[in-house]
Length: 128
Image 1: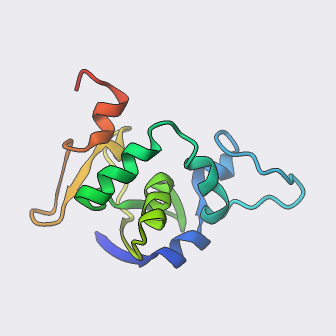
Image 2: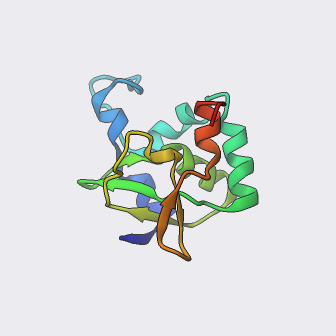
C-alpha cells in the first residue's frame, strides 16, 4: 500500500541503517540520535547525491520511502533530496520489497506496479 506522509513526520522517525550503526555512528555515543533528521547530513555527502536531487527535481519522487516497524528502512537519501527541493509530502510504503535492490525499483502510481526504470540501477551497475 502506498500512502503519503509529511516531511516533518518522516524527519522524526528513526533511520534503520543508523540503528545498526553500520553506516552512521553518532558523534555522541552517550546520547545517540538516530532520527532521520540527524542522519541526513551524512546522506548528502555521497558523490551521487547531486544526481539524485536533479533526478527528483526533473521527474519527481518515483520510489516510495520504505517504512518497516515505524523506522525508515530505505529512503533517507530521497528524504534529504525532498527536503532540499521543498517537497512536503512524500509517498511511503510498508510493503517489503521482493528483492535486495529495492531502491532501484520505481513505483508507477498510474498502474500501481513496480519496475526497474529508475536511475539507481544504472548508478549501481552501469551495465543495466
